[in-house]
Image (cartoon, rainbow, N blue to C red; front, side):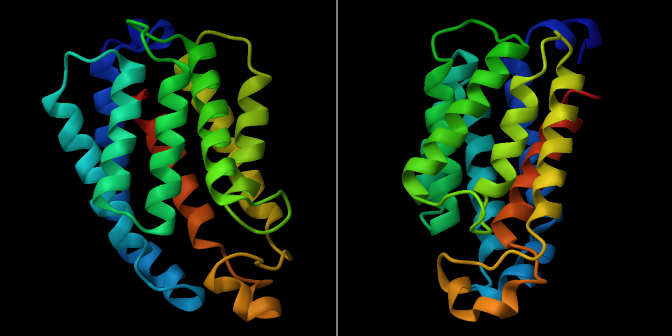
Length: 215
């Protein structure tokens, strides 16, 4: 990727590279996510994320004529279709809403990326109905988006770096929280010292986005 161009605009080819990086990351972290999810969930999160983002990337490779926002939106549809689990639906809904927020543009700047993640958060919030402090992906997405919204520069590497910092801070803040949604809620106090699997998947997601613009 041309570094100077990547710092100023993100076109369809860069979005495809980003989806490739996410798919690769979810594949490499598949067993880690399975292990996390096996403790307080169904144990299928790694499978879901791997399968869903492989499908999203495959779709993107075949639809290079789409503008970046539209491609993200339709890639989200593929995740929902291919991996219709709770987390698959949340991730897909996030991509769909975020992509819709920036649809129709030939290329995206850093503020468009902020808009995308604001839409991503909105899509996840509406679908999952969770609130801050309930030890879900919302606790990672909120500081991710808040950090990005405060960024006013034009460097893609920097805006994604800020997102990573926010996500990691959110994951750290979840320590001591008790899970209140899904199968994990059954374990209650036992979840206080455990990592929420979905939150870990969001960290992997944003770290892969960052990596894709650093190459």
